[in-house]
Image: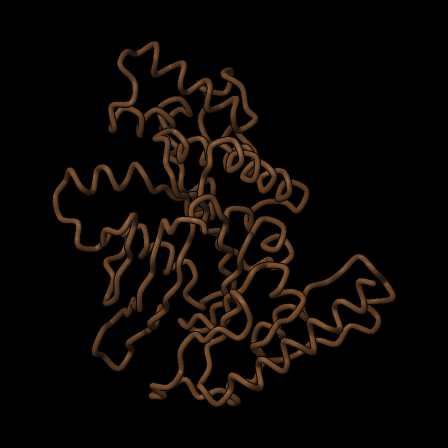
Length: 321
């Protein structure tokens, strides 16, 4: 069985705590990420998925819960030495490739910054060579090193952001909607680059997005968030073949396909949150419905979800034949 790299236990991130305007952006979610896999995290805007990523990497201090990386709680690390090593192992690729790059710094300096901070180059020439290698790794050239971010396209800027993340030789990368600001034609290139890098360097990803078709392409497993809660978690193929939670069904029903006949008959499902009461119900938790397929539900709902999974899986097999 694959080794756990990251364990999230009852993670909470509240803003304006204790006030009438309190926002429970992340409200008690738990999941694991295994070495070498890509876990996709999806949901509509405002569901808490980006806040989850930022809390994991400790851009925000958690309100409650634990984030265990290699068995050590990220949010209990206090010393500069501990945080220095943690920052090297875990990196983030941000949604806006322009806003995340310092416009006053040349590309060479942007990528070299992490190498310098972590002492990963012994000489200036070694530093320069590392920058050149990273640029080539992400599909750019060393001639780009002397330019500024505004001289590049959106796709090229995101490649620079990826090179910056790779510069410190991380084990785990949080990709926070890394393709949402890019043209559709460029999105596939960036995702293919991430898959290639994962294969070559043994990276582990948390891939945050709202484009479910692209998430399926890159992810081994997918978690679905709704208003701070993780409501479903399953292997990617199983989630698409047999979506169990009503919110997951609504998301999948919104995916367009390049098939005019299908589009003419596609039925868009709307999720009504009134069918689930998530407030003050202590019996609700993630429960395993099928191997590796979890749904946020009560004990009484398990049998219903198991029956639904069996029917959807059987129907999918018939369709495949």
